[in-house]
Image 1 (cartoon, each protein chain N blue to C red):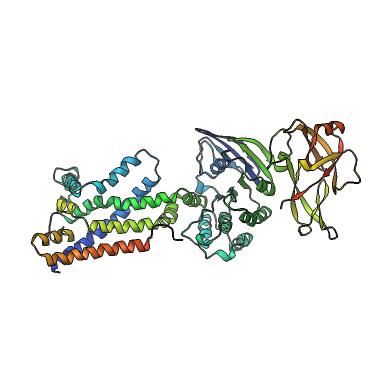
Image 2 (cartoon, one colour; image 1 turned 45 degrees about the vertical axis):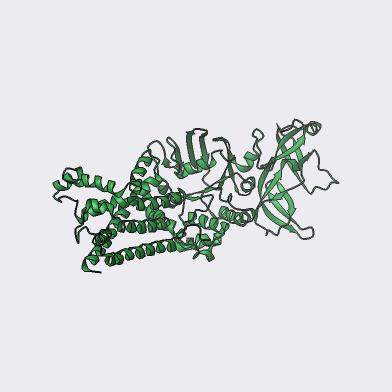
Length: 223
Length: 359
C-alpha cells in the first residue's frame, strides 16, 4: 500500500469512529422515544429515520449537498456562524454519514428497548429509581446487545459508504478521500493490484466485524 | 389507615372504589380476573395514573387533586406476578438496587442486621451470587419479595405473587408469606383470585367485582355475612384463628383454642403455643338444641343463633352463629330450621363434622 492508500484507511477509520460516537449519542434518545412513545408522530419519525435504508445514496447526497450548499438553509446557517461551507470538507462528510447511517444505529437500539417492555422500568420505579436513573441502570444494561449491534453496524456501514461521499465530499486526499473512493480511483486507473489490497482488506474487515457481532451477540435463546 | 379513592372509565372497564383499608395485617383484594384488583393495586403504586384519585396513607397525602407522588417517590414495596428481577444483576445486585435508592431517600435506616434478618426470613442466603436465570420460579419470587422489603417500605403491595407458580412452588412460598405476616408490622395489600391463599393469609378482605367493591372488612366477619354471595371457593364457610394448646398422643389429635372454645383437629405436629388458622365450611356444621350423645362428632360447641339467611337452593338456608365472638355459618335444610324453631338469640349446639387446618 502506498502513502495515499494508508491515508485513506486512516481517514476512513477516523470518520467511522466519529460518526459512530455521534450516532450513539443522537440515536439513543431517538430510539428510546420511538420505542416508548404512544404519539401519532411515531410512524412519520420512524419512516424518516429509515429513509436512508431505501434511498439511493446519490439521492440522499444530492439533497444534503443542496441543503449544505451556499444557497441551502444549512449552508447559510454555517456561513453565518463563520464555519464556512460543509460540502467537500471532512465535517461535511461526518454530517452526511450521520444521516446515512442513522437507521443502522437507531433500529437495533429501538428493537432492544421495545423488547424490554414496561416491566423492568416499573420494577425500577417501585424500588425508588427516578426515570433517568432507571434508564441508565436498567434499560441501557438490559439493551446491551442492541447497543453492540448498533455500534458494529453503524461503524461498518459508514466504512462502506461510497455514493454519499462522492456527492458531498468529492475526492480530496486526506480530507474526503476514504477507502471506497480510493478503490474506485485505482480501478479507474487500471491499478488492479493496488485495488486488490484495499478491496480485499475491506472484505476481510467486513467479515471479521460480522463474525464478532454474531459470536458475541447470538440471536435466539442461549438455553 | 389508608384511604383509597379511584375512579377510572376505560371502554369496557370501570374502576370505582372508595375504600378505607387497614394499616396493619394482610388485606386481600379478591376477585375474578377483570374485576379491577390489579388496576387498583397499580393505582395505589402510582403505576396507573388515575386523574382525580385520592390516596392518603397514615395521614400523608400521596395523591389528590393537587399532588401526585410518582411511583419512585412512594415508599412502597411491589411484588409483581412474575418476579421481574433485573436479569443483568446478581441476586445481591438486585437486593442492593432498592437498598441504595432507599438510603438516598431517607437517612440510611437499613442496617446490615435488617438485611440478614430479611435474607433469613426468605431463606435466600445461599443464592446471593446467582443470576436470576439460574433460580427456580419459587426462588425468584422469594428474592423479589426480599428486594421489595429491603427498601423499608411503609406499604407492601403484592400482585398475585403465587399465580405464576405451580402447586409445589406455591406450597414452598406460602410458609414464608405466613412468616412475613407474623413478623412485619407494615400493611400488606395482597391481590389474589385464589380462595385458598386468601383463606390462609388474609386478615381483611376487599371483594371486587366489575370494578366495584362488593364488600370490605375483616375476613371472618365478611365471609359470615348472609346478605352477600361471597364464597371463598366452592362453598360458604368461615376461617378462624386459634392457638395450639394441647396434644393428645393416644389419639393423635391436637387441641386448638379460640374464643368460642376448643376444637380437636388431626395432629400435624405443630408445637404448643403456635397460631394456626382453621377453616370450617357451612356444610360441615349441623345444629342441635341439646348436646347429643352417641354420635361420632368430636367437636361440639355452644353457640348463639344470630340470623338466618337464604341459600342458593330454596330447600336450604344458612344460619349465622356466634361462638364466643367468632362468627360461624351452618347450612341446614329449611325443614330442619323450622323443626328446631330456630330464631335469633337462641342458644344452640353446633356440631362440627370437619375442621380444616390451613396454615
